[in-house]
Image (cartoon, rainbow, N blue to C red):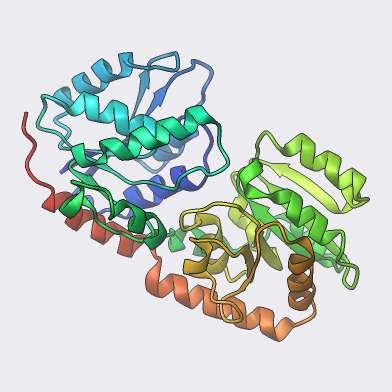
Length: 371
């Protein structure tokens, strides 16, 4: 089967790494994978394509500058026909809509994987996401990656047997391949600091302000915070750290290709987010044997069993988060228990290899295209 994964040209975060983990673990004897993006601005670097090429996969950028990007429909349809793409696997509302239009009149089938929905968003984005869900019955398949995404979609009319739950997975081999801790983190640990970390986008819905407020309350253990990633909240977070008097203890690392080497030095990984699917960053931390603390929201609950694989706290509750962090920092035995249980959970239920096998079966089961 020839499958084109159509992802985002911006950033290299959870969804983009999800695509890379999937194509890496699909059986090449069964699936020939392409990775593509639709670029609506010439300056976009499309790091997803760069990473895919380094893994040895064929890539394609569809240039359609401007927000509408309907020129991409013609390019995509032509590419599907010329390369005999049998399945277009889309991610996000934009690729869902343009992909559906591009596959009309072809024999190519289209499958969408929803990665989550925005909650605190503007009216325009909310309309786009509503439109996305409205077109799902016209696709050949929809495969949400968590129970919390699956349940509301199961209530949509006319979706029925087109809906398939395939739980998220993480590339354990990528994590196990990294043995060394990044030198910056190793230096902190040598000085005796307890290292708290976060890897992901620095955006409002991640509620990293809660993490800064919480750490300002932790005074029973010398600590350092590593924030790895980029986003439009970076300046505001830096300003908040100054106002809380903790700026000397916080470092913004920006985007790092060696994020796993940074992760492996963390003593705790914190995800204070308002909204998630099944968060890849949490899965990577648990696979790396790092204890996790996360907000008590759908998605995080799929991974964190309180007191067993980590801690949960109410969204925005900085004192509760501070209490959990202090408890973890002063209980090495508990931290070790969380680390071992978390890794075991990922091995058994959330590996990319398991996820890839399920997608191979789904690809093969999709009904023939009509073109």
